[in-house]
Length: 433
Image (tube, rainbow, N blue to C red; front, side):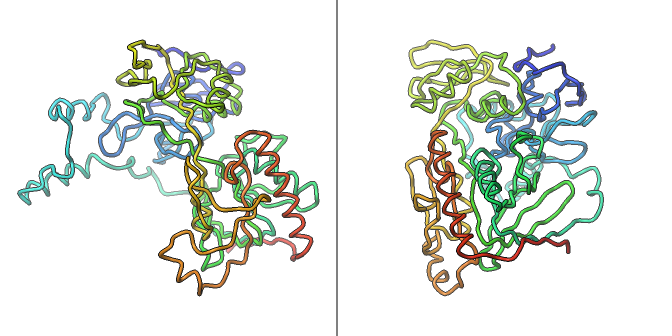
């Protein structure tokens, strides 16, 4: 039976792709996730361990629950993959209509202690482990090897900005206006960014995955085509924003439970409008603002007894027994700064109450200090300092409201330009190896 559409298109759909063998209409600017949600398709895969249904959740490319197979390539994030005409998208870790989780729930009605399941005798344990390995995993191998040879690029930018969200684009614009355009690396496709705000020097579809202080470089990669980028900047600005943690609620992993911020950003990016009933779960000014922007009812997490549904979310049951019927549940927790790259770079880290963040001054300059991990402090004392200055802007620097984020960008841009003027460097370069 056709599913009710949950998102209204900005105009007549002009693209068609296939989802699990069936045609799905899409619009230019759609991602696979936005097009599937619009069509009412909320489940994209099953979990690797227990085969529980999974679907797009954070909508920012951070959680990995929307992994799908695209044109024979496994483990593609539906929320980051732009729709193309005639592309073939398939779910992962599925067995048609078979639901191993439901069968397991029937056999083990009081739950599974998998740490002690079939430990003895050894032969039975080996058989059980073989079955578990067959059930677990992330899709099947690609249909074909990548086209063309893998590439390697070296970049020596004066300023590297990691992240082309609002704060990253604003900082890049401020530096470009002063004649010092930075190299901006963004894991999303260029089409996902507002055309008028795209940085002049942009590596789109490229994700920075690690910092190597001892090797004095940052590493990034793109998958199509497969290319490794080695970056050796003088200044690194982390504009990586924040993660959207989940809220501990019963059944909070049902397809249709998404990030409120991710949903709002997806609507802004695609131009779509909500045609679904949405309940926002969260408290505080940020949750109120997101609920107002989505035109949704908001409830505090403490009032929620559980989320309802089997194959997708159907409603929210409150602790007083009242049921709020809905098509989507949007979680609005306090964000947790995306501190991981800063920690890899050796930045001192502090706990903020909602997560961890690097220690930085009001201009966003990340404080120098021992490695983020105390056990590595002795090695850090003898290792040479990295050749870059590290900065943070936006949510990573502690800003929360749009005004605070812009103020963070303005202060960082001014301080960075002063640092560049005091220590000029040769022009940027890049070469293919």
